[in-house]
Image 1: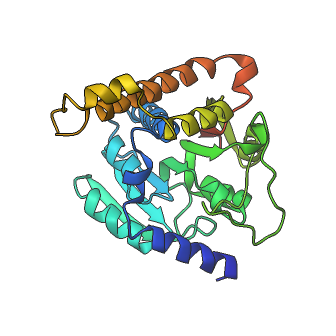
Image 2: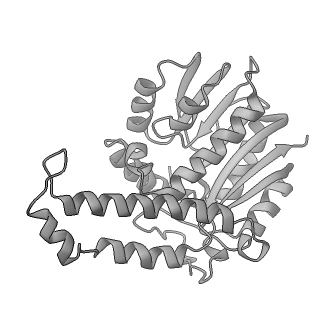
Length: 283
């Protein structure tokens, strides 16, 4: 195993001692929730309760996607981290036929054409060789099978992210790459996939970042502070805290629906922090 792979494994094993997905898919993390909801909705429509529909989640972590889809056929969680898979085995206990494999996405120990559906969300950017991983995914996907892929698209942002070309580059999030949607489409087509759906997420990410900073520093005004001395909410906390929680919830929900609307506008659809690809294997 190369040094970078050892580094990656250590990184994700340490992350695996906490419930990563429970921390990621919180109410405030609207883009993560939208990626999850879009993929799960489309996957359920594709499966439509077909028996024998075999699915694999590559980089499954705690197995959230397969739990939500509730596939009737074989469901396989694959991850580089054993601690994450251990959690997945505890959480997916109710699935019909669930299996767990510790493996590298660039070297999948699975037979050709084994799966009708492949999920790979927020994984490619963590791999030293994303093209090799797509080649492996194409190998295990049967003809007319569907790949559900999501990646960060830093190169498509209003202010593109500059990524180091050093082979050992790693950010705190473990990202080794950023992509453009054009690059991903080209890579998928090269490996025998046809993109059926492409969904842009978080088209105004820079503005959202500024607003998030504002809300982190948000202070209740003096009038609310005065009310705070007279009333308590049902949990015994100050009324100002209740108002603050309400405003934050309203903000997050509004932003999510605004993003869904704006991402349909052609000029904005080319921009975004994340993208989902639903691609069919042609041969």
